[in-house]
Image (tube, rainbow, N blue to C red; front, side, top):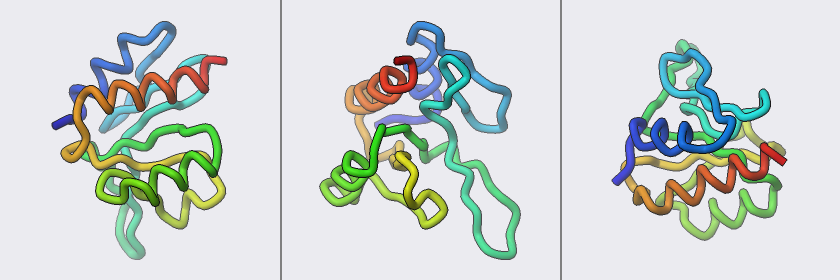
Length: 112
């Protein structure tokens, strides 16, 4: 299964991708984020960067809902991301091959 090192390796292999300084991981292309560590926020607690969960740009709400509803064991969302084309993926549950597709798709949508 995948981990933060896989995210880093896959993202940096993409043309123009840069990593922003972060306690987790944060990748951008052309100044636009395409995959980063999930900043978990719980009421009354400080934000915690989860490196076992990646936030991915998915382009639109329809794609987001298709992933979340179709594969809830892999993908989820939170109220703070309502209306945003972002989905979270549980890295320990996704294969590296599938993660490569997801990261590449996110990069492709942000580079255009």
